[in-house]
Length: 296
Image 1 (tube, helix red, strand yellow):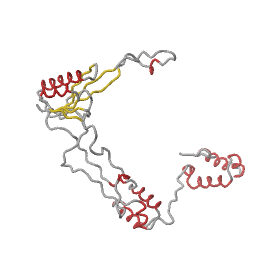
Image 2 (cartoon, helix red, strand yellow):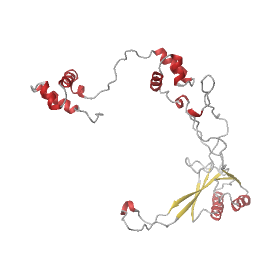
Image 3 (cartoon, one colour):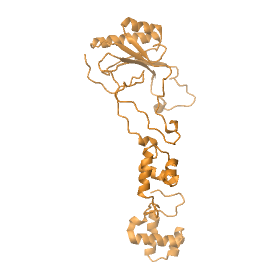
Image 4 (cartoon, helix red, strand yellow):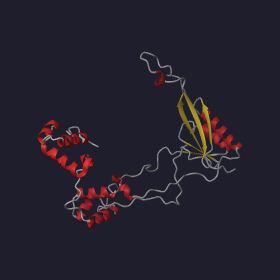
């Protein structure tokens, strides 16, 4: 029930005036006690006689029947033009109805947004075929926890926060692209010496599992772009791939306002990548989708 703030009666108040009128009181007396007019009292009494207690509840003010509804042929024409990526104003000019009617019909059909015209893209999971073809390396910076915080003990005014200056921990993570096997170490910093030491430890760990690493992917961190890390890759015979500093193209999905307009006012269908095209991945990501079977 959504009763507005100035409502005089609620369903309980309507039931009360019905009971008062049934006890023998006049509509004028009941209306003066409830702060409404006698016509309102008679309205709720009539509804109670016809529908019972269910008639005293709130209901939509929308008419059950429209006097002049939009013809079905016009609705079908609006839907056909919309699926051709026409705008609301163009459809209104073509069909001879108002833009408000077009907007209302499109909202009812679920086509008021251009994204509804585009089918959902199939889920494509990017991964290498064999373990060791590509490993991802990244660093996660986490603050140290010395003791319980103020959420439990309560923060008292004037007390110095003993957690300030406690320092950070750097979690170096390496994940195999095919098998999703992970190797993690917590080091004191994220400098090139620590990155190289972790990199060599990760390669040795995968070697114990019978996996020969061929390529490593990193982000553009200074430790990974250093000459020391590149020399370690050359010494181990691995290729290094890093994220491009400047994206070559838009990474987001183009919106309706960014699509070009043509002389006839139509907008073209969005260009899609074919399923057989090589997938593009965002480099530097260490997110996993589960642990698969590792092939030796």
